[in-house]
Image (cartoon, rainbow, N blue to C red; front, side):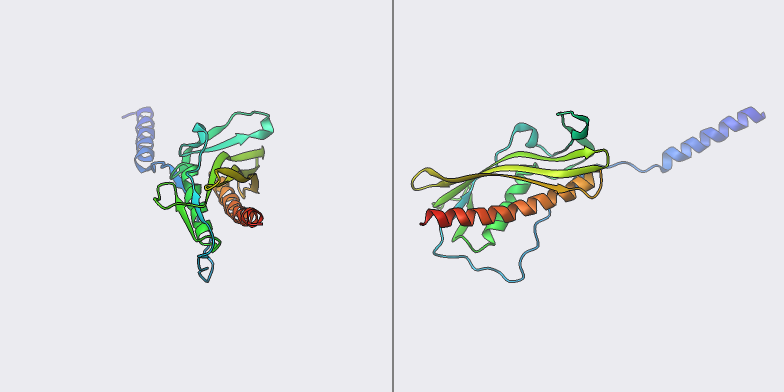
Length: 208
């Protein structure tokens, strides 16, 4: 075998070795982390109303497991999805559990029930998710954006008690999917706290 053929065989063997030892690339699946529960369990207020939390509504683009980001600094209104990162469930489903857990553990309600519960409710909470994405204001700077409209309805009188749109932005620690997940987790946790306070005030005003 001449020197040229020897070099070709060596390169071919090296390439084959690289291919055989390469690791497969998997999609990373992310979830929203539930807030840390309080040290002491808050008892339910048996004199308080029963709250029904309706299934969170969302536009079609948010009703999927895709993890979206937008390059706002380029002046482009379009959104894109990470190729190898997604949510384990659509954001409305992830937020649904977080909201119900936060409200049922607050002690402000006799009970917090879902759409499928057979029990009668005094108040209903309708939630419309408008935005849930990672927004880049610069190539290395981004934030998790959560925008959601909440409507509280008196089930007995069939009227709106209160309505509010929550817009929360939290800075991402890194300019990638993992950073976006952390920022959106913090935005979701803050939203749950703001929602609890707002509902408490709305119910108090209604009773006067």
